[in-house]
Length: 305
Image (cartoon, rainbow, N blue to C red; front, side, top):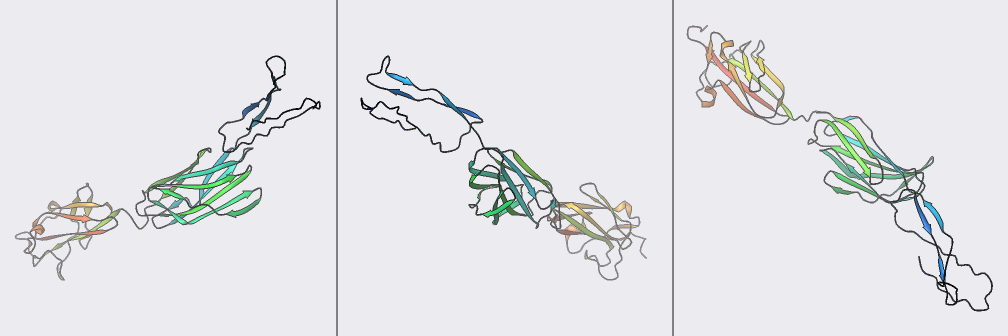
């Protein structure tokens, strides 16, 4: 507030009134704060202290009350899907809210698509599109800004995000907040989809007649053979000697043929690869990949047909 200075002549006997205007700029963090104001005047020939004080006036400053709601167009998604999120920030207070910054934190593996950003302002039943400034990204945090939101207006922020293969399977919670609003969140289930972080192991147990470790025409499969995996899973071959195991955790996996489940058979020697002479097989299983384990056996001595 600027100080007002004036000189009153000795013949100015009319009542003189000074009106001072106070202009507030910026954002006040006060909640229903009472602002008191008092004026004083002084002169050279006034009695006493030479200062005359006015009466005291007061007013109550209202504040913006922001309410934030977060929604999405689906409750579940999988890697490769695109999810549309919507943020609705409503000013239910009596004063305008300035310098709005809505910070949105996405789950791991959910990537924001900046070209999808759209905005609108809803006043009553009327909705008008607005141009939002470019979002500021910092890792998984995305910040949306807007200059000013009047009372009873709602700022709508709509954007899309893509689910990447790095997304953690299970429940992905998305959290958003404006520093003067509540914390809004949306819970979306992230399904494994076709891009699974597990793999599949297939293989066979067969009679190897030429000891090359590979099944050739005329080399039959062995049914009911048992293979034990390193994680404790027990696998039994079918009537053709084939087996498969799905949803195996990726990494180095090993399987061991249980020769006690094959009476009359022994491990067939491999004339080409030393590793094939072992009762166990070691494979490297990639996420979403497939690996093969083959076991060659031969009839024990005296069991030849």
